[in-house]
View 1: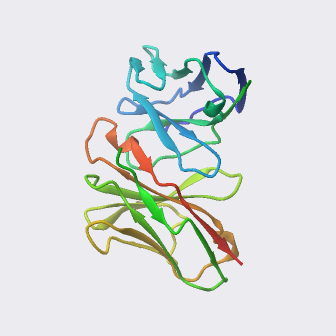
View 2 (view 1 turned 90 degrees about the horizontal axis):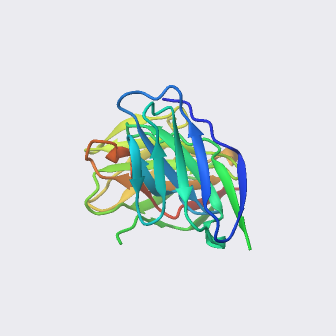
Amino acid sequence: LAKTTQPISMDSYEGQEVNITCSHNNIATNDYITWYQQFPSQGPRFIIQGYKTKVTNEVASLFIPADRKSSTLSLPRVSLSDTAVYYCLVGGDYKLSFGAGTTVTVRA
Amino acid sequence: EPEVTQTPSHQVTQMGQEVILRCVPISNHLYFYWYRQILGQKVEFLVSFYNNEISEKSEIFDDQFSVERPDGSNFTLKIRSTKLEDSAMYFCASSDPGGGGRAYEQYFGPGTRLTVT
């Protein structure tokens, strides 16, 4: 499994854009990059997944450079309810390996 | 939107007792999983299940754990003789069998908080 590195925590304010960068230098050819969100006492929730370039959905955008050694999750115009832990996962098989994630705190 | 459900939401048991945690995965999903999260720690993979058999398990999933799909909708995790250190949030998840990264798109239930006293 490719090792991932992401910041432990980030602070933001309502209405701002939050960008979380994840490093995964040892990503394999078949690996996908997947981001999950977790609120306290809830199960992780799938946010977005990509293989290369840019992916956008109604919640977030995922930017992946050509070398795929990193990825950036972009949350546009965050609100207080976006306060959560965000996990970057890299792989393609059926076993998710969660790290400590990035705790994003959104303040009013 | 379809969702994974889990029962009970909270289970309190005494050390040495058996518990069964129940899950109803999303109906057209074919891969099922159990994860656990000890308070304040990472989410840990326990086991994956496909085609009525375990496809992968972690070192945490020892002989005291077992999984079963007793009918077409339920997926259960049994802990035979609970220990204090089994206290955790247990999450069930399911995924589509499709390739191209779809296995990494897993849908989690709300969890069962297991407290062993």
